[in-house]
Image (cartoon, rainbow, N blue to C red):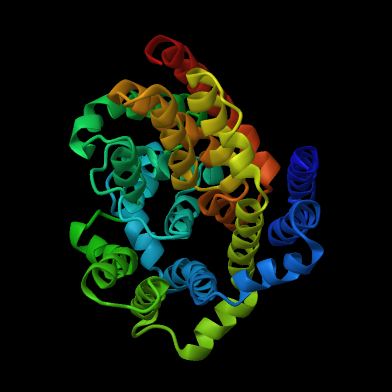
Length: 394
């Protein structure tokens, strides 16, 4: 039975990666179906996948992610995107690093779609470089962001205080910034030449539009007792869209933008991702991995990376690897934690189930494969450095 589960998992990944060049959401749906057929009783396959498509949280998140591209389109149509880019007062390379990183510190599902239009408007790079930089730098600050949900959760699982692990996370931040500069910022060419004098005041309106969504999302999730947390995300992006269109666009203008941009394809990507994740969780793969009794280096580095890639969720990877480690080897020290966290992150970064990667590629108008080609060199170097560190501290 375990051989059949492993075979189903391998075939599902092959189908997902092979079909992704034509349709991301379709590839994920096919991959989920293959994994379900190989690993679940046939009578459970359709109910497992249907449960995802009727889940209010998934439906609301898909709707919210479908609204996000309209915010950038409305800002572009009204000239507010031009005002933002021209008045930032930094160079193109700085925009490519800072825009995703700053918006990434106000995390919300699919939030990479808020910074994607900024990089597109800034110019100076190919579509695959824009998509790759948007993904790479969006998560850079989260290694040391003390209210990052994934960092807090992982530290708690390891029995460590989040403030204790922060200094040990700094090497990952420095390494990511350096590798991102070498492979993703250096190809960005030219300078930003504003059409007129810069005005810091002109930044306020476009910044308010972009920050309204994550700020309202965070506020409602903390202060309101919502039956479904994704209601906060939908409320946030709807507010941002309303601000972007306020006084300049009619409802019919927004409808026209939607018809032209087809933003619903991003919602379908979300549905496909959750369908695959549901099949993976029911497949028996997590149990098979935990029963392998692996050396700590293989567990923390190899399995951490693999689970991050297979699930598109760093928290899913750490929630499996860290308990196995502590049960097998005792308390996890902060250096071991940092290595495990970074390895699982690097797998998650490249996962086709990672929303930021898939929507960034789709928004930039490039393929997942082309974006991977840009992300692979810095990712491989980062993983090799992490592996060397792992054999020292584990």
